[in-house]
Length: 296
Ligand SMILES: Cc1cc2nc3c(=O)[nH]c(=O)nc-3n(C[C@H](O)[C@H](O)[C@H](O)COP(=O)(O)OP(=O)(O)OC[C@H]3O[C@@H](n4cnc5c(N)ncnc54)[C@H](O)[C@@H]3O)c2cc1C
Image 1 (cartoon, helix red, strand yellow):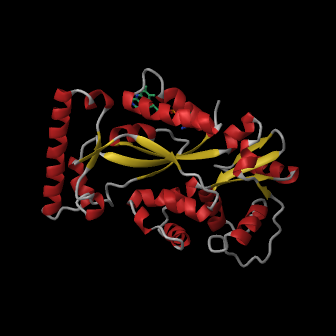
Image 2: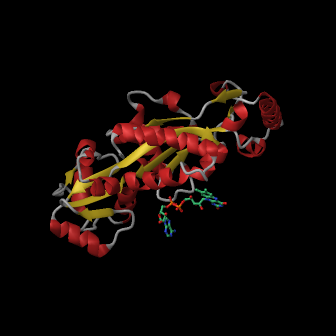
Image 3: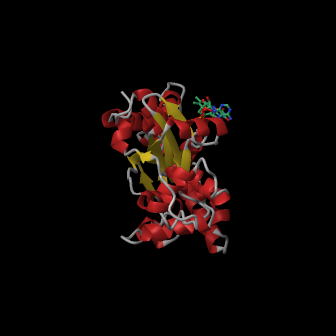
């Protein structure tokens, strides 16, 4: 049994394929398969397997003209965010536009976005429509960072991978306006070499420094680990054997959300009423957001 501390890192890339691959491989814990060439193949697999949620971790923000903005406002597309403060601004994630594209390639309102995407990502957006005009301008992360706070908070998304236990991750996945990708106890088999043939757990803050409580915790973890391995040995699949794994099991959870949603998460999860381990983790993430200038 391995014991790790909670931690986090930002997954920040303006390369669509690499970012989707980094987020998606967390589910299968197959980061060891990342190579110079693997990202495009991985994204294609995700599209073929209909694991669309992984595509939600990459987003676009476009400056558009007033006519297009008015049409988008009128037609009410779910999961497309609009604001018209400094200029008409439209953002959506890759999943949203892929879903529309697969259903209605001829949508006249979305055609300028399709034109932009077909030119840059022809293996995802391939059509027989010929060269479409692309009268939209895609903003870089730096340009989004320099917007007025009220615009930036709505359109800029930040992706954080947290390492925590399954109990805390269950709290975090209740935040409905986020997109998630999580290490799967269905697909991961902790008896395999790549997991060092051990389970990994996170010890609660209020237990780890108390010798007596830690001994009780450790014993429970060892028993759970043994039961899990015994079930695997008895030819049970990992997805069923997982039922005896502890709430303290380490998990990796990728969360992508707007700054607006992260603010709400920080408010709820750093409050005195929050779980102490969730508060500890989210206080670290919040401090990082301040250092990076995402929030003040
Ligand atoms: C201290 C604490 C104790 C908790 N205890 C429990 C518990 O005992 N049992 C339990 O089940 N959960 C519990 N929760 C989880 C809680 O109920 C929420 O699911 C979680 O905090 C997500 O918050 P949220 O719904 O405000 O925000 P999010 O899901 O992050 O959504 C963000 C905002 O979007 C809006 N929104 C999103 N979806 C909808 C919708 N469908 N309709 C209308 N508005 C929407 C709301 O304005 C919401 O605030 C607890 C949370 C905390 C912080």
